Image (cartoon, rainbow, N blue to C red; front, side, top):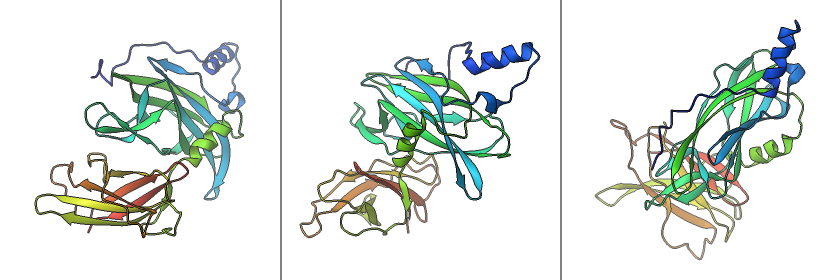
Length: 302
């Protein structure tokens, strides 16, 4: 049950430390570039049962240029959750707007491996509890100049009810790691690795071995075989080629063969396609998650 609109927020006046400092210096006739007051984290923007902030990390060389690093950290009250990029049977994915950022060419948002939750309506949602950092990899327009990140974040937090939340966050980006670096690295380590379908299927490794379509004459299903360490819990999520696909969450099916103890089978129906869309030739994104690993695989439906 929603309280209010997810796109409505009360008018607020937010004065952060670095904004106040910049204002004082301008009034005094001085001018300080963003690099002079770059910091490890922005102030928390607090909402009911949640708070959000930006954290900065050390720059890293990538593709011949320095890639800046930051993260959106969301902290939740005990018993509350927020959602992954694909929320499952219910929920609302976060919206992230970087308009107004300075000296930034592009931003890539990364998504740590999520969890599956019962949604209280005979379905499941997908997301996070406690504290999550969504890593951001940033390409500046000019690496020699300082960059500043502005983020307008819309997200939902759910306990017994779901409430919309919004945060407006600003961070002059550091180039050297600070107090937030360890948490940012830990979040990056939980982002699923991109691997090819059928690769890495040797015993004890997490991999998607096969994806095939089946029909019982009334409806069509997709069966996915996942290899994993024997005895380790594994979950699987599936996304369509665009956000308006609403595929069901895969469910474990069938008995595990005694001859292949590390193989798990999941199945989902080909439902939730947008009007006019066809499954033939569609590219699905499969995310397999275990306690110690997570992978992302692209699979084409023949």
